[in-house]
Structure formats: C-alpha cells, structure tokens
Length: 377
Ligand code: URA
Image (cartoon, rainbow, N blue to C red; front, side, top):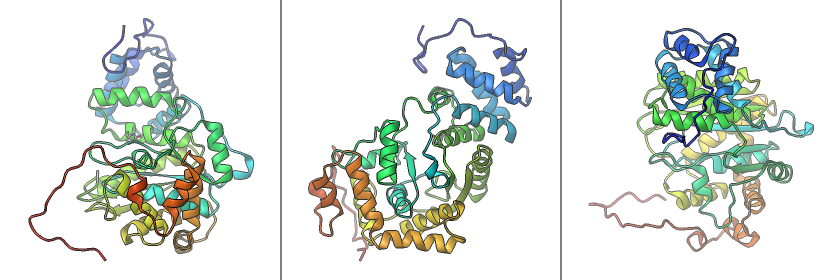
C-alpha cells in the first residue's frame, strides 16, 4: 500500500523490538517527555531508513519530538544516525584540514555561496558545497546556477573529487545516496506540520554537512525583518543547536549572526543574482554582500588554522575576490560542471552582455512605480 504522504510502501513488521522497546513504546517514551538513549534514536532512524516502520509511526514520533523537543545528547544522536543512514563522503589524505562549507538560513537576494565557494577555493580550500532549491519566495543556489546554460548540478561522487582536485570548489545538489533518512523525515515533517522543531532542523541540516566529511563548517544565521528568524535570541538558539551537533560530529563548527532587514545586494532573481555575483567577483560587488563573504570566509580560514585571526582571514578572502583569483575559480568551476568554455569565458570577461547568455525567466511582467526611484551609482 502506498501512502499519500511519502509514496513509500507500508511495512507489515512495524513493531520490531529495539533494546526491549518496540516502536510504539519508543513513541510513548518521547511523547511522555522521556529522553531517548543513543541506541533508541539509532533504532528509530534505522527503522526509517530500512522502511521497517509505518509512516503514521514516523509522524507520531515527529510530533512527539516537536512537542517535547530533545536534549543536546538526543539531538546529537539523531544527527549522527541520520548522517550514517547513507553514504559518507571520503577525501584524499592530503586534503585533511582543508575541506570546508557553510550553511545559511538564506533569504531574499542571498547569493553568498556563488562568491564564497570560489573565494575559498582560491585560498587553497576544498569546498564540496551541497546546495538547495528555492523555498517559498526565496531563491535557491541551484536554481540560480541553472540560469547559466549547461551548468550541471548533478555530480556523482567520483566527479566531485575530480572537480575538487582540479578546481577546489563544486556546487551541487543532494545525491540519492546522501542522508536518505532526511528525505523520508523531511517529507513527513512537511505533512505533519513539524518542520519548525529545533532538533529536527538541526538533524536535517547538520547530518548532510556531516556526510560531506568537513573539517570546518560556518553557519550564516540571520535575524531581522527580512530573515527567517526575526530576533537575535531565536537566531542564537538555532546557531547554538547547530554548533553543538556539528562539533559533536567532529566538525569544527562556528556561526556568524548577522542582521538582515532588507534583501542582500541589489538584485533578486535567478539570472540577476548570477550577474550580481559575477560583478562581485569582478570587484564591483555591493558592500553588504562583500561583508558577508569576507566575514564567513575569514571565520573558515581561521577555523582551519590558515590564519591566526579573523581580520587576516577576511583580508585574504577579500584579496581573492578583488584580485580576480576567485573569478578564475568560478570560471573553472563552470567549465568543470558542464558550461561551454566559450560561455564561461564570456561571462567572466570584463565587458559581457550577460542578458544574451543567461536564461531568462519564463514569465515576465512590467511593474511601474508610482514615483521615481533612487539610482545606484
Ligand atoms: N534546511 C534543511 O535541510 N532542513 C531543514 O530542516 C531546514 C533547512
């Protein structure tokens, strides 16, 4: 039988024993405010991964977690077991200490990844950046990159290694084999109104970063009128939970909290944001975008010990952007991910007609302002 929620088959053996506790007993323990042991969390995630549990039981456990939350040790166990539900990437020994990534709470106009990944690569890091699609009204990094003709966000692990070896950064979508438990849980969180649970958000985000086998992860957590989290206190709570889980997995994990009351930069929309990112990589980016890129990159360089303080880290990232090294990395990344050399070269040249190259929105509408706007210079 298939369910509407996830399209997964129902299992008939759904009360299997786990350290004496059946799945209904595990649900009851969490529902009544108990703390699940590492073994119990492991049993739940294994049942989810092997489909040895009904969707309604997963939904009930998700609701119990939503209502009772989890202590730090439970969240850490949840994150670890989710990470282990699928493939965990491995890297050559000579990259030890160099593999980094960031996670952002995002927001309108957030194009940081497009500038930060090549800037970090230009500073000698390896950046296997797994990005997402747009959510609600905010654009996704993958959608933005796909406005570049030929850009392929589907990269098998062997290809990723090759791109990281030759270029240093690769921006891609989540593969089928990475954290399969998250795909199941995410669909059911959506169907059961349990998306906004701190331990579930933490497990979902950090398990995927853990599966990238990172040395260091920086979290870009925003708060303010234009951000997901409206106040500093809730942003700090999220950052702390993510940092605890990341550090618990052995990744050096730090966070930058920044105020976001307006969109980032001046451009919003897939191809427009690619244009603004390219302009930034040509040294003509807006101050707010540059500040985010240099702060996040600076923190990562400090966390992996490439620099001894944040200002030196930010300076190196800024130099990689202003001096053009990051632009060369972006060009090489485009070529490695399927963009024709001529297209990549043209997009990265000083005088480009971006609009003749990049894909345009399928639907266009002219909106007239009732009065004159302010012209950016
Ligand atoms: N991103 C994720 O991958 N999972 C969440 O729960 C929230 C953001």
